[in-house]
Amino acid sequence: MELRIGVIGMGAIGREHGKRLMEKITGCTVTAVADINVEGAAKFAEQYGAKVYQEGEDLINDSNVDAVVVTSWDEAHAKYVLASIAAGKYVFCEKPLATKIEECEAILEAEEKFGKRIVQVGFMRRYDPDYVALKEIIKSGKIGQPMMVHACHRNMTHASNMTSEMSIKNSGIHEIDVLRWLLDDDYVEGQVILPRQSRISAEEGLQDPQIMMLRTTEGIAIDVEISQSSGYGYDIQCEVVGDLGTARLPDPSSVVTRTDCSCAFGVMPGWETRFIDAYNIEFQKWVNEVKADCITGPSSWDGYVACVTAHTLGEARVEGGVKPIITKECPEFYK
Ligand code: NAI
Ligand code: ISE
Image: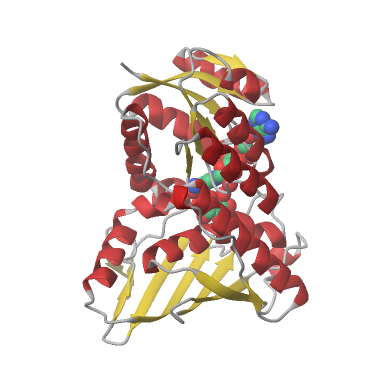
């Protein structure tokens, strides 16, 4: 039987995921979509024969929806995740799980009370073949003990609502999650360094770029540049330095040209293409696992830890200095 999915939030990624679920992922179909801007959702609904709602809650309670995908704005994630848990439906929530720590805590509590993991967070980089290969190399011991990570996350341009806080909570949160997963380690402290301001982002009143500095329990020192307006492309880099060698993500493959005394290869324009394999793998696995009634992807606990870390870095940006990153004890339920 096909898994009947409802998607809430039919903006950029809602449409991408909706199309992916209809055309690429096997074993599922999109039966309903919802958006406060109902016209945007109606176009998709018409094309794929799905029901359209304005209120996400109505979609969640539709008996033709077995599982929910939340792709609304960051602030409108927690309420739909909580409503899905209340309805006893599996829910895939795009990152961040929530924008407030208390909301993440309410989700942890509700899911634990429900008694089974039913929430997955869209930290898709864990499924990206290059990050997976990087993790394998670290685990193999080939580069020795990791000591440092140098990473960067450059967006070509940013949405008009981007703020200095969101730069960490919306973009930087991918790095926070993927590096914790890559190193199999937790964070103990963090700091934000503000380099010279980009003139392009300054027009929007955005503090950009920012450098997130993190230290893990094993003492690994991490620096990640987050830029919202590189101007040249979407560029994700990561180099892990061990005491026997280093390992770094490759640039996504593209044809190399040599012309006019220069050598060039392409840089991806955005997350849609850079992480297309990761999204496809992530969703096929989620659909298979929901149907088998046992999900293993990024959990509410991962969403909570990322939220606490991003929040602490936000405070460090405003107040300056190094801040301890303090989470609750991880419940047995999530171990
Ligand atoms: P968008 O602004 O293009 O679309 C968001 C849609 O949600 C809009 O159509 C809006 O009308 C709708 N919406 C907002 N509040 C709603 C509510 N309360 N109920 C129903 N619909 C509501 O934004 P975009 O880029 O599609 O991002 C959506 C979410 O996906 C964000 O949380 C973002 O962080 C995440 N995202 C994740 C990516 C990834 O790489 N994993 C990439 C891009 C976005
Ligand atoms: C966006 O919401 C995403 O999640 C993308 O993956 C990320 O690279 C971008 O910075 C975010 O704004």
